Every structure is written in structure tokens, then in C-alpha cells.
Length: 248
Ligand SMILES: C[S@@+](CC[C@H](N)C(=O)[O-])C[C@H]1O[C@@H](n2cnc3c(N)ncnc32)[C@H](O)[C@@H]1O
Image 1: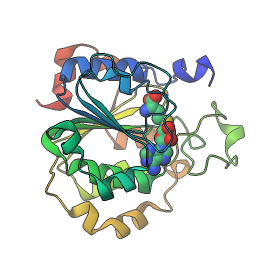
Image 2: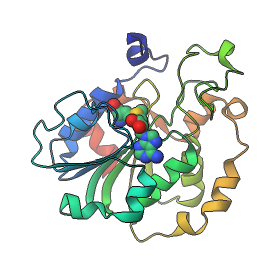
Image 3: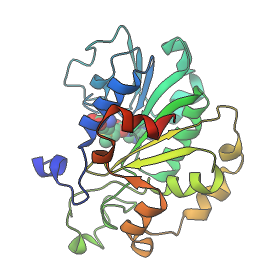
Image 4: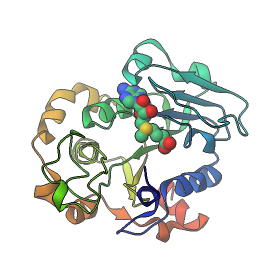
């Protein structure tokens, strides 16, 4: 990835690692779970007992910084949740989660469903890459180059995980969802969770089908951002303002 990947933002806002670091400092989670870790650059930001799930870790940094425990599960998230309960590793409910695994919306929806079960009502689930900058970046298959020539970022790929926001808005209106611009492709924070809810798992297939043929090209990324109450991280730059988006 070039430096441009991490800094360019036509929508402004605070780059996602800096934003995540600020959320950790402000929310002070007692436990942290991450799906999709790669080199460990997001995992390192957690200072509490942590659990990370990734089928192919490529850790290149001291991820233990400030942590008493950190469990690594080298497997796909679906397999992890079939066999394990995250609270046994964390010693309690998941306080903060960062979902950044497979960038296909069915996977992210399952990661959300499986994570919420182990959260509390006011835990925060963060989802990465749900605010793609254009229809090319929002494509499902990385190899699909049909819209590349119209994109300002022909080499970027966020996948179609943005469709999970459409599903959550429709099926779980009580969730408190805030979509922060956090470049390159956004961080969405979800709270007011219900670990007992079975709405998403019960209606999983019809919900998946309901957005299958929706495209970002039809919606338009600006309209999509309005639909999901997008907010610039520059507006949430101080702790007091950040608080408004979570619990107040
Ligand atoms: C974008 S990278 C994560 C980056 C990291 N969170 C960061 O911010 O530095 C995505 C990671 O998801 C992992 N991944 C892919 N499929 C997965 C799955 N089914 N379950 C869990 N992780 C998965 C990949 O191996 C890859 O390391």
C-alpha cells in the first residue's frame, strides 16, 4: 500500500488508526475482541485483555503493549464461534470489538451476529470499511475492474460490507449506529446492543437476499452516507463530543 492509501480522503476526517486509538483512550474498554488482525496494527491499540481471530496472522509488531493477556485464534471467525466462547478468554463480556475480517457482507453480518451475543447493551462494536469512497471501491469482488476507470482510487477495495448497514437499519432499528468518516473507508460504531436478539439470525437468508442486488452505483456514495447518518471524525475530535455518539 502506498502512503496515499492511508492519508488521502476526499471526505476529510481523522485517519482510522488515530480514531481507533482515541476511542480506546476515551472508552477504556475492559476487554477487546478483534476479527481480522493481519499485522497487528489495530490490535496494538488495545491496552486491555484481548482476543484476536484471523486465519493468517502476519504479526510484525509488539502487540502486547499494555495488555496483561492476548489470545490469538488462528482460524476463520465462523469456525471460532462454532467452537469457542470469547468470554472464556476475556474473563467477561466483550466491551469493544473491531470487525475487520472478510470484506464480504454475509461474513460481516455473521461476525456482527456472533459478536453481539457476547456483548453487553452498552458495549461498542466497530465495523471497518463500510463507507467506501466510490462504487468501484465498494465492489464485491476485488478482481472486478468494471468501474476502475471512473474511480479516484482504482487500487482500493473495501468490499461490499457496507450492505450490512442497510440490513441493520432495516432489521434492527433500535441499534445506535454512527458512521464516522475515518479514512480511508470509515469506521462504524454500533451500540445499544441486545445480546438476546435473534432477529438477524432468524431472518438471515431473507435479509441477505434483500440487499443482494443493491449496488453503490445506483445509490451513490453521498446518498449512502446520508442514509447512514455519517459524521466526520473532525466533529468528534474532543472527548465530550465523542461521548454524545455513544451513550448520551
Ligand atoms: C484488512 S486485514 C485486517 C487489518 C487490521 N485490522 C488492521 O487494521 O491493521 C483483514 C484480515 O482479515 C483476515 N480474514 C480474512 N477472512 C477472515 C475470516 N473469515 N475470519 C477472520 N479473519 C479473516 C485476513 O487474513 C486479514 O488478515
